[in-house]
Length: 151
Image (cartoon, rainbow, N blue to C red):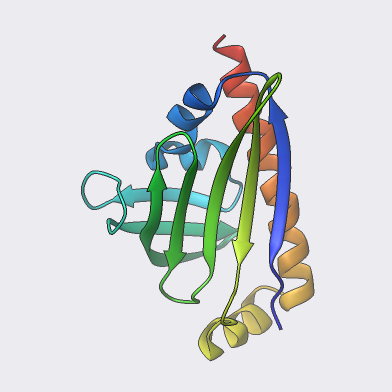
């Protein structure tokens, strides 16, 4: 059964500056090792559809998503239609800037097709989720570097 995953980082910048980077979905390939492209079909807001291209080494696959939460300077979340997972970025103000939390939630599990695809093409659920958590930390590290460099 897939697990909820979470990674957190503290960034020395106000939530508005972090939000400007996180909410720009077209920039996600700069940060995420699994994301090749995110293309919103319209202005990003709750309800907007997003087309994605993902990779794991030499393997590529498309997904579609719908933005389910878009609260400026607070939270950005989208639900992957193919597997029902919800990816979110939550921004919490701190004394020194912002705590950014990236989560992958699977409140209703994933689809049979997704589980079989992960087993057949991506080495199984445990190694796939270990790669996701490493990717989440890499994503947050890169976002932090970009935000803090632009002080």
